[in-house]
Image 1 (cartoon, rainbow, N blue to C red):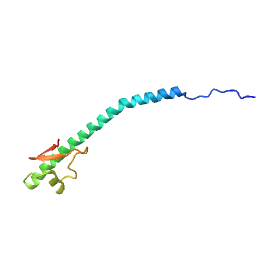
Image 2 (image 1 turned 90 degrees about the horizontal axis):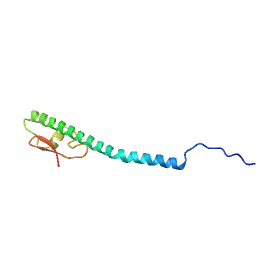
Image 3 (image 1 turned 90 degrees about the vertical axis):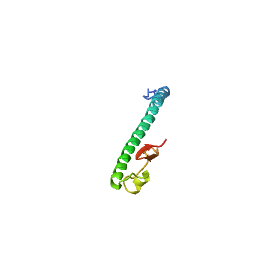
Image 4 (image 1 turned 60 degrees about the vertical axis):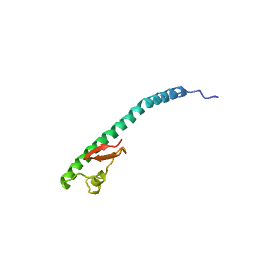
Length: 102
C-alpha cells in the first residue's frame, strides 16, 4: 500500500529566486551610498588631521620661536605621531599652513 502524499511546507524555487532578486536589487541600491559615506568619513578625518597639525604647528612656533620647516619636524619633536591623513592623502606645510597635497 502506498503512503499518502503529505503537503510539505517550504519555499518553492520561484519564491527563492524572487527573494534573491530583491536582495540583489537592494544591494545594488545600497552599495554606492555606503561607498560615498566612506569617502565622506575619510574626508572628515583628513580635515580633523589638518586642524590638529595646524594647532601643533602653532605650539611648535610658541616653543621654538620659529615655524617648523616641515611636518616631519613635528613628528621628530614628538608633537604628533602621524603626518598624513587617515585616508592616505599626503599633507604639506608651507609658510606655517598645513594643507592637503593635490
